[in-house]
Length: 166
Image 1 (tube, one colour):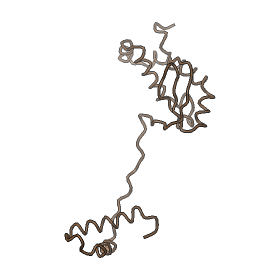
Image 2 (cartoon, one colour; image 1 turned 120 degrees about the vertical axis):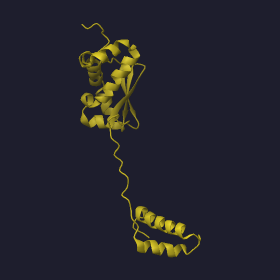
Image 3 (cartoon, helix red, strand yellow; image 1 turned 45 degrees about the vertical axis):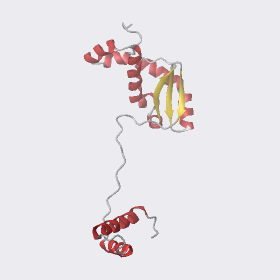
Image 4 (cartoon, one colour; image 1 turned 180 degrees about the vertical axis):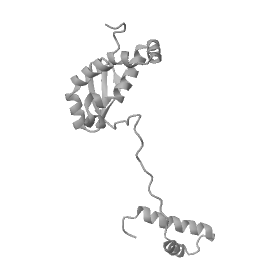
């Protein structure tokens, strides 16, 4: 048996010498939080690929692992697998908890997830449409450079946000 029974087998063999040294200096709560973060990072190994995309452990509250789930059906599946999750968390990460509580809410992205939002493609307004918009403004502003900028903005907005109607 290891000298520190509260730690899982995985941590003892995966820690580098510096990590092992630092690990001894951490409080049990800090070690537990590190183990919980590692569990979240490796969540796919615990629940599988499909469920890992739709759920993530978020905290350990009063000895109960709280798992954020996208939908109630995912929450139900996590609840069904609670014994398996608890067993793997105990064996691999040394985390011992009384139960698992799924919570339907927004699932946080893993730290290594890349942001996938692409900016919309730039729109170069056609000159003839800018002239048409400029004629519509009709000298109301009195400053030609501002009127031209406004006409370009009007055409760009129409191209970007119109739904086929003009």
